[in-house]
Amino acid sequence: MIFKSLREDIASIRERDPAARSGLEVLLCYPGLHAVLVYRLSHRCWGWGFKLLGRVLSYMAKIMTGIEIHPAARIGRRLFIDHGTGVVIGETAEIGDDVTLYHDVTLGGTTLNKGKRHPTLHDGVIVGAGAQVLGPIVVASGARVGANAVVLSDVAAGVSVVGIPARPVAGRAAVPPSEFCAYGVPDGDLPDPMVRVLDGLRGQISDLQERLARLEAEREGRQ
Image (cartoon, rainbow, N blue to C red):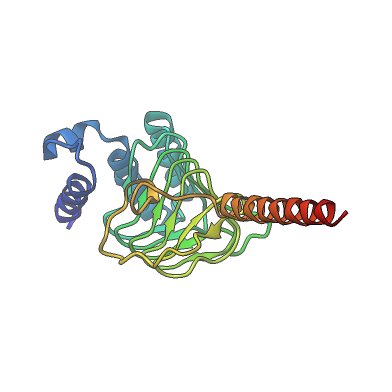
């Protein structure tokens, strides 16, 4: 079972990272894989009641990889943490299968309550570098979170969100869950919705200025 899971992890990383040239390279050189392997051991220790040992193992993994995964978090199969440095996965976070996280991603809590306070990521979610997904929210299957976005509310399936706070990208169709998008960017173009709004306002102001200039010219012509 352990070796089958390891083979799955290595194969999924090679599918999602063109820089991975061999399974041996992934096994030896990918800190995201190392962090997940240690997490699985620490999670079992946590479930068996050896909570301090679980925390010690997760702390050792953080020192070695720069990735912090609480042993109580629930993580599905084939999680790929690319590059990895600065990734934080909180205690009550839940992650489905085939999820991809890039460096500096935080799955964090926004309350001091002991209950559910971290996000849930369903299958196939991609979270871009530097993104912060905060609170007991749900990011549904196949959703994409752009780099440096701050997600504070639920994200629907297949939707791409960007910005602070994160908003759906206008005019973009949902992305099929089977389509992998590096860094959560479907086609290399993921503009901030606020930028689109400002561009629209600039266009309206320009139109108003032109109309005002015409009206003034007509008024002067009558005089």
